[in-house]
Amino acid sequence: MLTKQGFFPPDTKAAGSFPYTPAVVVGEQVFISGQGPIDPATGQIKGTSIEEQVELTLRRETVRAAMSALDGRERDMLALKFSGGLTNAEIATVLGLSESAAGTRLHRTLTKLRKACDDAS
Image (cartoon, rainbow, N blue to C red; front, side, top):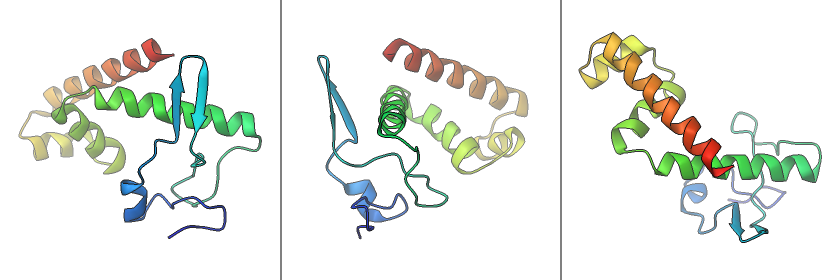
C-alpha cells in the first residue's frame, strides 16, 4: 500500500519486497529511487530539506551495506538488541551464552559495524 507521498510504509510486507534500493552510488553519481528516509515510529518522512533527506538515505544505505557484511549470528545479535530491545542478559539467555560473553560479542559486532561504515564513507 502506498502512502500519499508514494512511499511504502516500513511496516508493510511491500517494503521488504520493494525491488529498489533507496540509493545507489555509481562512480560520482547518486541515484535515488524516491524512497526517502521514513521514521518507522510515525511513518512520516524525516528531514526538513532535500539535502538532509539525501544524507539520511545515504547513511541508511551505508549501514545496510555494512550489516550485510556481518555474519548471521552478528546480525541476529544486533536485531535482538536494537529491534527486539533485549538486554545483554536476555540476549545471553536466548543465545545460550554467559552475559559477559554476550556483552563482549555485542561490543565486537558494533565495533566491526562502525568500522565498515567508516570505511564506506
